[in-house]
Each structure stands twice: as structure tokens, then as C-alpha cells.
Image (tube, rainbow, N blue to C red; front, side, top):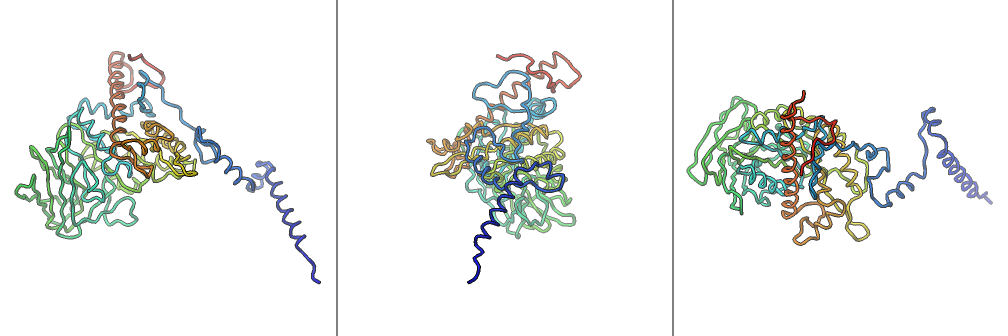
Length: 481
């Protein structure tokens, strides 16, 4: 009869487990001196236990978390924020992060904002209402930059957009045949039957016209090309394009532009970036949304192209809204994302050196758990990583998550009547977009008031610093009723 070795196998297995448990209690310093990694066979159990605890403050479950490294809030220079207002946190050295923008509101006839984001602002949700509120207060007409073609052109309400014959390449594509433009897109004509039309629809309390249509394009040297255009369905006119090999801007002005159509009879050597419908005065807000992007890939756009767009347009404020495509439901450490966002912001700062920067946090987002929708445990940690990125780059932060109502707000929004969010518990409806735009606009108005009070104070009390800058060594200069 053969000998039974089963008992020996069991004894050996218990011996191995005992040794691993013993290693778990050996000093980590002792192991590090011998270039060994500390063993912890209970780590998965412990981690699961942490994840099942109630999510209150931001989790500190692993070394990747940055919750314990939160930057302190900048000191308040003037009055506290009004009730129900989520104010800006200005991490610039002299709390002057919005000064370039507010100074432009005072001194420039035309002020331009680039609103970069993901599918959260797609179709001009949120961004469009924010633009409208600014234009009602400070003047301006039109919707700013519109791409040559768009997958959501039929969904967008702020402009009627039709197109044919364009191949769209964007930041999320792995293959491109031409440099991307400021929107993260570039449009290549497929043939000679290539066109795009734009019209401003009649809407309540909003102008259905503008005075300027601007085409952004590049025509390679050695080629000759013209575009045909007609305004308000009038007789078509032709204009030659400049073959400089760099981004050019063609301005077409008219007292009242309700609609305009561009056609391209000869597209050899031509690429296009978009058409801006705007005014010569007031506020211009460009919606640069790209579905599926995390906001960390601006380096794919050549710096020379971004600098050229800034030269042609002059951006006074850049707003960044990202996060939905990087956040994971159960993960609570996003230091990697914060580091990537720091690099992206620094890249933009070099290309737009005289521009204010504002980063909006990710919104609340829900997941199904035990049959009910609840906020993702990762949201608060993700907001922390974005706030840290603002601290590291010295820009302004706005807690959009908090402005929505914080934890559980996305469920409330989706179940409200009328609903302010879709049943995917991720994206806004137009009703929710307008509500959130009002909250952001209210904050802008209050911060503009503080900017003017700060400027007036330093005009009356001169210091070595610019009158537009305030030192951070004073918690509050004076109270505002």
C-alpha cells in the first residue's frame, strides 16, 4: 500500500502560513536594510474593511492618498463669502489669480474666456447659460467658437449648426494627420464638397444675431484657395485665404449676422479649426468640450499653435472643468491625477502668460450600491487632488461639488422635478446647467466686488506691490457690510 502524504502537505502549508504571518510582524526597517519588501498577507482584508467604513472625511487608505497633505485655505482678504455662495480659493502668491480677468472687464472693450471641459459641458450645457448671464451683465453677442463639425450639433441649443465633408481628429485619437487647434480638434476636408453653416436661433432674453464671424484655418504655403460665404442667405461672396502655414483668422463683419454659411471649393492644403460668432464688444465665451478626455493631454497641442491662438484672440480667463473620465468608483487615491493636472496647467500657463486660470472641481457622481444610488466614495478624494493641483500651480479653485450640494446631490438632482441631472447620475440637464451657471455667476460677481474693493484700498494705501495685488500676510483688511 502506498503511503498517504496528505497530512505532510497540510503540515507544510500551515508552516508556510505561519512564516508569512511572522514576517508580517517583523520591523519594516529591518527588512528595508536587507532590500526586502514587507509582507502583509492581511492587507486585502484590512483594505476591504476600510472601504466598508462610512465615508466622511476624505479617505487615507493608502500611500497614494493626499488627504493628509491638504493645502491650507488662502487667507480671506476682505469680507467672508455671502451665505449660500461658494467662493473662489485663490492660491496665487498674492491672491491675484483673477486680477487679469477682472482688470480686463474694467479696461477692455472685448473680454474673452476659454471654457475647457469634458462631456459635462457638451452641447453648451452649463457653459452656454454662464455665457448668457455674463453677456446680459457686461454686453456681447454670439456663442464664440464653434467647431467645423460636431457629433452633438443637433443637441446644442445655443447655435443651429450643420456641416458636411469634414474629418475630425481630436485629443482622444491616437492618430492625427495635422496639428490640433486650441479646442483639441482639427478638421480636414474630405473633398471639394465641404461646407459648414451656423445660425443663432431666437431665444428668450437672448440676441439672435452677432456682428462678427471669424474663421480659423491654416493653408500650407504654395497653395491657393478661396472660401465662399453668404450672410443671412444673401448672395455668395468669395475671399482668398492666406497661405502662411500657420493659424490665420479671417474676420467677416456685418451689422447683423443671423446666419452664415462657408463652403470650400478647393481644399488642397487646407485645414480648419472652427468659426467664432461674436461681437466686437462685451463678453465672448468659447466652449471647448471634448468627450472622453481627462484634461491632462494639453501637451498634444503644439505650444506654437496655442500661442498663436492667444495672439489672434487674447484670452483673459481660462476655465478648466474635468474629472469625470479619470475618476474611479471605489478608488480614493488620486495623487497621480493631481500631478498630471499640474503639468497640464503649467503648460497652459506658459502658452497664456497673462491669463487668469480657474479650475472647477469634478461634480458629484453616483453609483448603484445595494440597489440604491449613492455618491461614489472617490469623489471627495478626487476633489482634493484637484484642489492640490491649484495650490501647486498658484491658480484659483472653485468647489463645484460643494456648489451642487455635496455628497448625495447628484441623486437629488436626478430625482428633482424638473430633473437637474440625467438618470445616468453623471451629466446635467439644461435645467441643472442653468442652475449651476447661476451659482458660478454669483461667485464671479462677488469676487469682482472684492477685487474692486481691494484695488481701491491699495490705491488709498500705496505699497510696494501693485495696487491690483494683495499680500497674504493679512487675514482681513476690513469688513464689508
